[in-house]
Image (cartoon, rainbow, N blue to C red; front, side, top):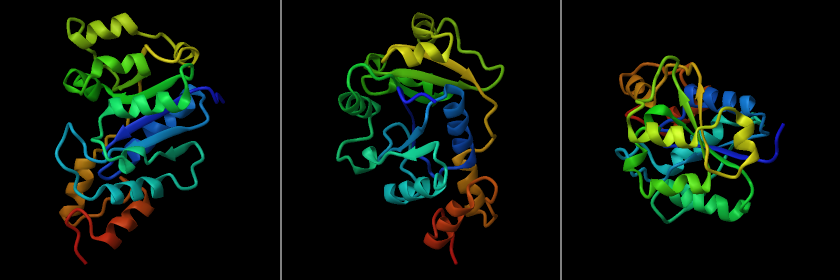
Length: 216
């Protein structure tokens, strides 16, 4: 296991579900790093307001990773008084971890393609690497802005990321579980059980706190 890289996956996690967790664990194992860190966002700047408070989303992520040493939770965005800009997170991590430690940000291909709309996104690769998770058979448009960026910075294997502090894009094909947070919320609000879509302890928390339109 490599202790030399900080690998994280950000998100709203509204709520966290088994698709998030399985992806995180598979990336951790594939890279051979000791841990992958989940960083819940406080106030997402690229989507609608979440269905519950940031503290509730954080609590569900913490419950979801209990007992799994390979996954941990970082509260920095929830505790920050700044908007949840990825740039702030990357700059904070780089300042804490030093100039030489590899920092790898895991994101889906769908999010990766929207990067040009993110706050000062051009700075991201000066601070860390991208690990872009794609579904089998999914192709990034060659003639797009992100296609050009990927060609210029593409890594061919995980070792390239683990040997440099920043600047690389690694496309990794996974077969993610077909679960979305929207599906989970709709299931709950329809009065149906989301069991096996989310961890049991997260479902218990949702019931106890009557989240996502759930009533006793």
